[in-house]
Length: 234
Image (tube, rainbow, N blue to C red; front, side, top):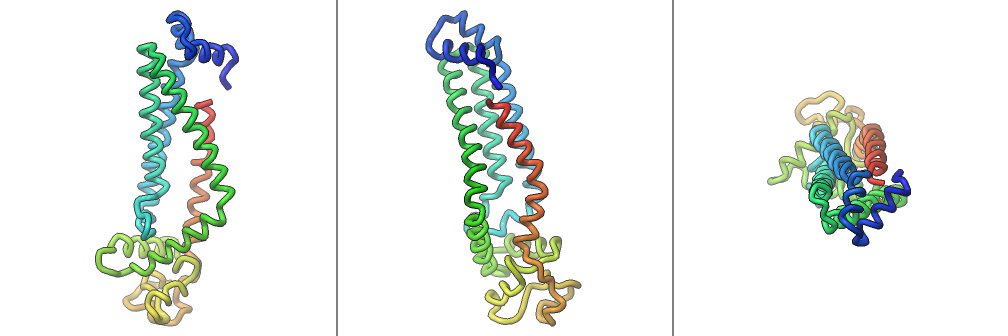
């Protein structure tokens, strides 16, 4: 936590005190805070890149928001935090009140948005699950159609890797084909047209729950990192 003396220097500096007070304020921690902010941004950006590599197969499962993935959001947030950190560094080096004021206002907004996002995520988790499942089922309708190679490949890879079939169960595919059939990637043992065979030869686990479980296991580390990042901004 920031000490009382540090907060005093912030108020005195931003209220327009002398250059000497501004210099003391910078020496008491401002020059380090933007650096921590920039490092935090680098960390968030790094996690975003890691998710982009490891969950790249999921990026095109959604038909309506193909670009809105956790990886892309983290990359965007990390970049913004890094830019804000650089703004603070320039303000600290040049001892510029406008730049420092802008830095602290933007930092406060980011911190509040982080807290709000976490609260909303847990408060509306059921609604998020319902919307995500509905959107993914719409994406199934585009499976195998012209111009949707990415979505088709993504579903095939996910069903093969996670040993699952459909969003909530294998019957989701019946509405796509208008018959008792699933993609060959749903088969316990892959072979051409195996999706037309007995349902006993198909995976029955829901892909949504399998992928959600995988993300929850990996996002524990991400939540810990996000908490640490938020604490460095206080």
